[in-house]
Every structure is written in C-alpha cells, then in structure tokens.
Amino acid sequence: MDFLNSFSLLLKGAGVTLYISGFSMLFGLAAGTAVGIMRVSRRKYLSIPAGCYVEFIRGTPLLVQIFLIYFGLPTLGFDIPADIAAILALTINSAAYVAEIVRAGIQSIGKGQFTASKSLGLNAFQTMTEIILPQAFRNTLPAIGNEFIALIKESSLISVIGIAELTRQGQFIISRTFMSFEIYAGVALIYFAMTFTISRIFRIIEKKVIVP
Amino acid sequence: MKKVTILISVFFWVAASIFGASLSEILEKGVLVMGTEATFPPFEFVNEKNEITGFDVEIGKALAEKLGVKLEVKDMAFDGLLPALNVGKFDIIIAGMTITDDRKKVVSFSDKYFEAGQAVVVNGNDKKYNSLQELSGKKVAVQAGTTGDLMISEVEGTDVIRFSKYTEAFLELSLKRVEAVVIDYSTAESYLKTNKKLSVASPILSEESYGIAIKKDNTDLLKAVNEFLKEFKDNGYDELNQKWFE
Image (cartoon, one colour):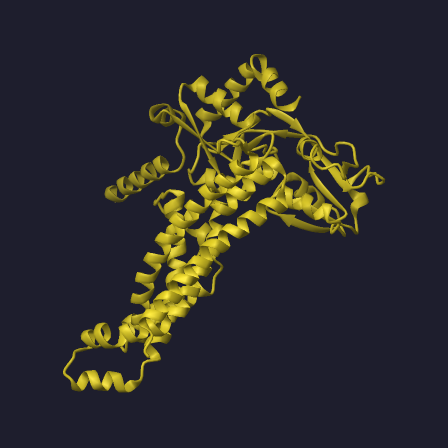
C-alpha cells in the first residue's frame, strides 16, 4: 500500500518533469533553430550576437542560469512563478545546444546545394526553408534526440527552486520513509522509461525520413 | 530636476511594492506565503497525501489564523530560502532555521520559537565525542548550509562533505565512507528510529534557537509575528510540541 502510494507520488513528479521539459524542448527547438540559422549567416549583426549567446550559455552551468533567472529577474522588477522560470531557464539553455546542432546540420549540406538553388532562381529564404533545412533536419535528428534526452535528465536541477518534479518528489518520500536506495532506484527507472521512449520515437522518425 | 525626483520616488514605490509584502498588503491579499525546505521532519516534510506538514507548518498555520489570512507553503532548497525571501517570493521563512549573526545581516528574525542543538552521529556505538574538535582530521558529512555545516567547517583539519539532503549524509555514514555526521539533535533522533546501526555519539553540542525569518524592512510583520509567538507560547505551543516530538 505504502509502495503504491510512493509510486503514484513519483509518477506525479514525473508528470511535472514531462510538463516542464516538454515545453522547454518545443521552445528550445524553435529558438535554437533560429539562433543556429543566425550563426551561419554572413550578416555580422546576426551571426555575432548568436555566437555570443551560444558561447555564454554553453559556458556557464545550468544551475547558475536557473538561479540567475529565478532570483535575478525579480531584482530587476520581473517576478515570475517558479515553473515559468524553470521553463525559461531550460529553454534558454537547450536553445544554445540546439543552435550548435542546427549549425552543424546546415554546414553538413554540400556547397553544391546552395549553388544549385541559386541557379534555379530561389532566393536565400527559399533556399534555406525548402532545400537546406529539410536535409539538415534529417542529418541532425540523432543529435536532437540526444539533446531532448539530456534535457529531461537535467530538468532534475529545477528542484532547487522548489518545483516538485520527479527528483524532488523522490527526496520528499525519502525524508519521510528514509528508504534512499529503493526510492532513488524507482526515480532512475522512471527517468529511464521517459528517455527510452524518446529514444525509440526518434529511431522511428529517423527510419521514416532516411534516404535509401 | 523635479521630474527626476518624481521619477525616482515612483521607482522606489514600485520597487517596494514588488519586494515582499508588508503586513497591510498581506491582510489585503488574504494570503501569508511561507517558505520552507520540506525534507526536514518533523519540522517540515511532505506526507503521504503529498501535502507539506510538520511542526513549523502548524506554527505557520496558527500565525496565519491569528492574522485572519490563509497560509500558502512554498518549498525550496535550503540555501535558496534567504535569497527568495529577499526578492519577495515569500513573506516569512519557518524552516527550522537557527538564528545566527550572519543570517541576521540579511534578514530579521522573530523571537525564538524552538530550542535545538547539534549532535554527532556515528556508525556503531563504540565511539564517543565530547566536542567537535575531536573530529579534526576525520571525514564528516553534513547537509550543506545548515548550522552543523557551519560549525564543523570551523574545525581545522576536518574533511567536510556537503550534501543537499541530510538523508544523503546519513547514507554516506551507513556506507562507512565518512566517520560522522553533524546534524540537529531532533532530526538525528527521528532518523535513528529507522536505522539501528547508527547512534548519537555526543551530548548536544550547541545551543541554538530557531526563529522565523522576515525581510529586513518589514517591521510591521515582525512585530505581529512576535506578538503572535508570545500568545502562542502560552496557548497552543505545548500541545503542538507534544504532537510532533513525543
């Protein structure tokens, strides 16, 4: 009975983990794609800020970023609730990594593709959206899947600002029952179930879009 | 020049309204927000129904009741409590927090509401310590940022290993990877009920008082809290003490 109760509390925590990391994935993917495209732009006013963003976010710990957003923004007059702060921090963080993946993906497309598009009379925007990105997307799928899995695991850090996600729920139960090993094992299994599902979904998508 | 003065005063007015609610604002909102770190039984912990409860939470509830408002409890990492109070994430902290001079530099404390002390816990029951100095040269696990951490960190030559949860410190001790854990006596007592291998190996080594932390400039609220504590100690405190500690 106690076991079932603990398990259902952990699942509740897993729901919060999925909610926070799910939104962060979506926003991070969108923002990261934009930043990645900016990074390969020949226009300096696009590529330099994008480069700075990626370097700074990649070069500072996520935990510090979470504290900066949750405790720093209110001092500037923007008070945001903990879950929004968490999504914001994870989005900003994930976008930097996605940007690098997208940049690598774009650069993996042969120069001939750009030249060919130009000779067909496509403008820069059309070249990017219709020729380059679809191919880059296919090449970057494994790396994006990796990033999503990393994001789910890293989301455990948001427990420090009081979000009752999976890890924090585990800590709550441990502080009541003192069963550290059993509860952490359960927490690990649930994380694994989530990341393994993502991994499988990405394998299916990869198979669908593979070039024979 | 005048415009600038007005602008500045408006800025401070806005800033003051953002950073922490004064007593009148709390009464107006009808909610008192309390911050705590909910893995510290029996003071604060999450029960089977997924609610934060414990000795401190019931004190918070009694305080809110006296003010005629509702209590909202927010959980946060212990190290994050003071910063969060100061940026206005909550109005008070009741978290088994010892009143110390260093903490008093950043927040105000109410009169004490609980007397506690640190003790040394070891694996087995053959060793005894009469002071923290005797732990010099040994590996000691603590919960980061707690009084136990601050006290043992001042003892020269100790190798202090800091965990974010005290249960992790006890786990380290159970695995014999550290010599001892320095922790609040009452917490040790409740943990040792479930773990017969560990034992308390020292007398209570410090005199500490837990207080309710309030933002520095929030003097009205501080006054109200102290008034409440005075009344509560005569009426209600003993029952609460009995409920959670006996």
